[in-house]
Amino acid sequence: MFGASMPLIVIIALVVMFLASAIKILNEYERAVIFRLGRVRDVKGPGLIIIIPIVDRIVKVDMRTITMDVPPQDVITKDNVSIKVSAVVYFRVMDANAAVINVENYLYATSQLAQTTLRSVCGQMELDEILSEREKINMHLQAILDRSTEPWGIKVSLVEVKHIDLPEEMKRAMAKQAEAERERRAKVINAEGEFQAAQKLIDAAALMSTQPMSLQLRYLQTLNQIAAENNSTTVFPMPIDLFKSFIK
Image (cartoon, rainbow, N blue to C red; front, side, top):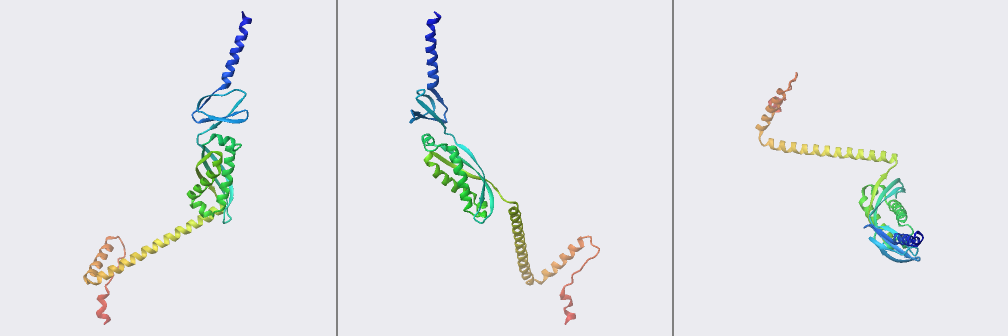
């Protein structure tokens, strides 16, 4: 009896192994490129898919947005300044078939392309442009990478320059430049204040000249302000009008 059941057990085991090899479950964000005898058969997923063991081979592709760090790149700018620039690239696979067939390793290829493009774009710009026009650089990088990776079925959605490392001597020079610029602005603001104050004094003098009594009131107000302070010495300004008779 035991010997008669052995073939049945073997058959059941083979069926279970066949089903385990034939049935694949893909997550919502995964797609499977199916190769049958070396030729692309179809792209399936997500969910339950059935393949022919030994005959079929599948390559899974992640369809989610991938965040890729671009390591710091040595760049010589257009004005011959050596800097290090790093960035981050956001992209996703739109066509799983093209990502598997048209390029050997789309992750490695995209990484290398991002590094070379970052060096090329930053090398064509001056340091001041790189520091002040990051948004322009980001858009330019994104356009180049998106156009270059399109045959691979990849969509580059965003590129951001993450960090710009300057040499120490350049940092000191820029600090001196910024300090000189702040001093210039302070002097300009001070000069504008002096000009406005002088203009107001001229306007006040013109107004007081029409009413001589206002000058006397101003004199009395000045005496009141001096008397309010605890000074050991009090200075009394004398109007010139008092000495006109002696001068004549």
